[in-house]
Length: 71
Image 1: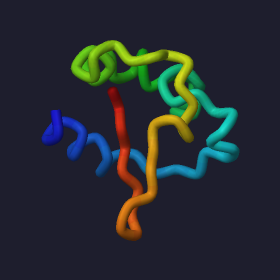
Image 2: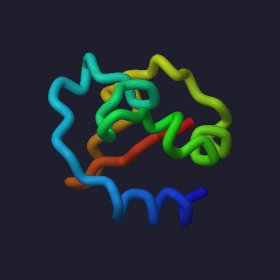
Image 3: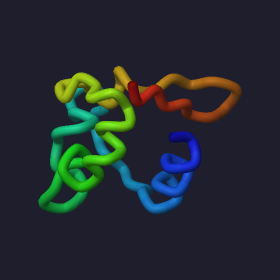
């Protein structure tokens, strides 16, 4: 999964706004689509995580960089 996500992170860069209100998997911040719909394989590989998880629930700040916890 790490290699799959590494390729994905090189493709996505954006300012989302309030990470405490934006849902990671189901908010439409990729144009007219959601991460869960656009990348269903990633969602499944992550173990079908909570679709209502906020971006702030999925990230932590470690050693001057963001770490994502997708499962």
